[in-house]
Image (cartoon, rainbow, N blue to C red; front, side, top):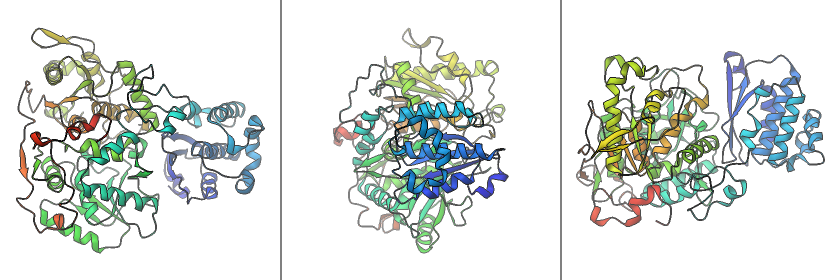
Length: 593
């Protein structure tokens, strides 16, 4: 945000993209115009983005200079910017001297993480005008990570060929997401999507004033749905963007930017689908597209989008309509599969969700650390556990509508209603993954804490006790109104989602959140334990059949490119007798595809 807006907001956030073309002096200049640093988040595995939040006002210019220079030092060290103190930072050399002296005779460009951390601790402690709480604790940026491995404390690693940078820096590591998984997932996508991702990568690496974007937005008081509602139409949005073509980017400010939780991994030879929007993107985009309910409407949108020169246009499918999102995603299916494509109904995510997600997203470093810690403490290993999710606040009953997004569920009051739902969810998870550890998640912490402290009957005289983390607070809904919330308050929600996506099977009920977890695991083993009422397992709620990909739409823009029918893939669900072995198992296993 421009410094001029600082007086109009309680906090001011600035996303600084460090790219080869950036001049460090511009970063320095911006920092020196801002107020005291309040936080820097999230620590990232790719050295290209930090979100720096500044307090609105400050009383002492000296404090302002100290904190600005600390931010610049973090940019220098953590982002590996190669600069010369004497040539580009001479104007602030005097205020850097205390840090320089504490590290003498080490030069700024040679600071290591460990000695820089010590210097920051010492400098902040010894300068009373600088509040230690004003910056992110140095250990969050520079602490040695836990042992690299398959989410185990002993560091054992079943995955070969770990990125050398990860191994050298000992960053927290997940087998389920990251560069090593992006490469595998990219290989199984249809050719047209691979081509678009490569083009997207080239455009963002060499962006210019003529680069055009189609933006997925969520701002202000406009209902956007939760993270699962917002990302469920992503496959269609990629198809739409590829046919224009424009660079797809995601710009959320409600509750916070998605880049605070997820970051683009590299999928091949340094290529990355950088879905983060440029810094000059406006909040209010003039040209808006979407809300279509027919192929003809979508085609008209594509034609109009091709004809305009606006740098930014927005695309909205409709987060509140299950049928509309499914209609659009079915077009993606028809454009992706040969012969037949799986039919999508209700809150279902497409089968390629896990692969698309792994090419575009991985958790930021702080979230990776948290997930690794959780899975290690619970003894969870990728593909060796099942998940059960219960959306306890879903507004099936009128009285739940007030607490759906704002929270505040009284578990004691709703316990009699929820216990049969909870028990059935666990039983369904056990049914599809017999004798597996069951990871339990819910949108209410008391529901989770009660579930993991008792044995639950699952039939045949057997009982199981699920596992989860004890939490003191109810998870926040990303479409709720929580003005006092912090970025980290939404970590538990993302953590639950990504852990579900790393398991072998998922049992979910109403709402799209649990379905998102199943989609991340490829939909290859899932059950639906609840509609409006409890659904005992086994049931047929996940069996939707397939449809022909050639029965309509021939001659339309959606299929007029030479690439459209080339490089399509076969659906494992529609052609189980013709499945290539690795295609069905690639979502949660490493190896060659």
